[in-house]
Amino acid sequence: MGLEHNPEDDVGAEFAFCKLLNVFPDLTTNIRSGGEDCSYFKETIDVKRCTGSGRRLYVRSTKVNHPCDLYAFMVGVIPKFFYLGYVTKGTMFNKIDYDKMQDPYYVLREELIKELPTIWI
Image 1 (spheres, rainbow, N blue to C red):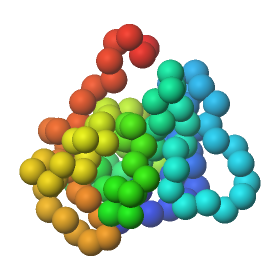
Image 2 (cartoon, rainbow, N blue to C red):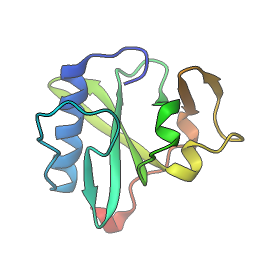
Image 3 (cartoon, helix red, strand yellow):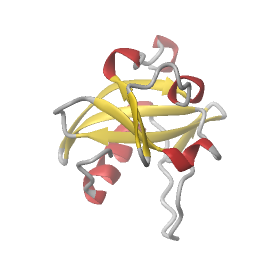
């Protein structure tokens, strides 16, 4: 998501990530804020996206009150996405690790994003 917000591409990134893990995305149509996009082995996952320039993971500061277990990072726009990695909620909201707070976002540098464990693939 981040600063180049496009809702259609965000949903596309969620579908692409869910296809990668072979899980169903949240297909509810009610309006909601926050929450997970999918879950995998009881881990809640929020999928975030950027277009590729300035790869940083942006998460709204309001999510610190209701964090997901993992934040997955997808890069691209419809129809092409690739998976960059993930961070745990502990890393995402650790004040030492984030690049700088750009209210209303926590911004995490790309080098702190981990690859998906091979057990998940």
